Image (cartoon, rainbow, N blue to C red; front, side, top):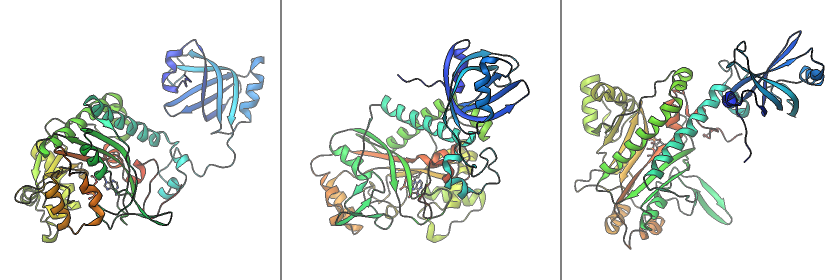
Length: 440
Ligand code: ATP
């Protein structure tokens, strides 16, 4: 195995000869000694070179001529030294190899981003991410997804990979990206919904996928991107959408608990956010009761035309309501009218949708539902929505036996943004894609 020793694990190597690689973060060239701060994604470490020692002459010259942000590979001894402020250890090198040299001026100082325009930062994301706080966002996001996956693997789920090119703009038409596909048109998948359900019809029983979704929405909000990472889950043999909500609550509680152990104190220190592990079960309310209570408690009156969905302002107030009424940060909203939702969601005999949204910290992070698995009902719902040929292939999935099932999708970029109190989704994605951004 090719092992790379990181800055945060050097303590384990005290008195050992090792190889360390990183960026040159800072050089303090003193009269008798050079202090070189080296950096990797986990932190920084001091390398100390005594100028008076003859054997160090070449290294001293090399450092004197080295530009910051170059990268080096160092053969060195890890030494304990109480006087070193950085973790009480230093690297004493015997050989330094410059593995790449920084040429030219950096586009901005990534240690001081307050005065740098966000677009400039995103244009130069490879520099922007050298900022220690920005780097942390993605280390934490990686752990979050790891723990979410872990929960599902522990519960007999399998990970699948569904195509992103699709032949028909099926789900909701208007928000789909069209692409040239040889001599015909193809579309980019808005969600893996149909294929997750195909997996249920195939007998896969429990599946998930972590993959991009594409939405041609020309919306410039702090929480929408045209391409985002969706954590999609679907599973069979459920009794109702309550099972789906339970599964999601348990998954989030598990992942947050693990995340708190690993990153809780850094989330507090660096992002000034308390990571609260949610208690089970999560509270839930019906949409109409939410509106009634928002009016009674906070004087919020929903415009008649928007009553069938949760408005952005109501989403914010739901966070307040969840805390005031249930002492919880999450809230499931149920009983949406069916017209607002996909034809594939199950409805009860009164037309009430057997699905939910999950609101966390004032923003929707999930939609989920029990799906309609009965061929005749599904065909009828599709017809009512005016969907014909385009969904024919999908309807076929349900003709030959398909267990009752349901699932949900969590927006990874959104949940990261809320977890770390980041002002916009542009910064909680590795690379943002929006109506006006396709680069780098
Ligand atoms: P919204 O109403 O916020 O636009 P939606 O109802 O279209 O979202 P769904 O299709 O239900 O969203 O998608 C499930 C989840 O995927 C959402 O709860 C959200 O976390 C995430 N998501 C949806 N659209 C976007 C987007 N454009 N950018 C980032 N994340 C998104």
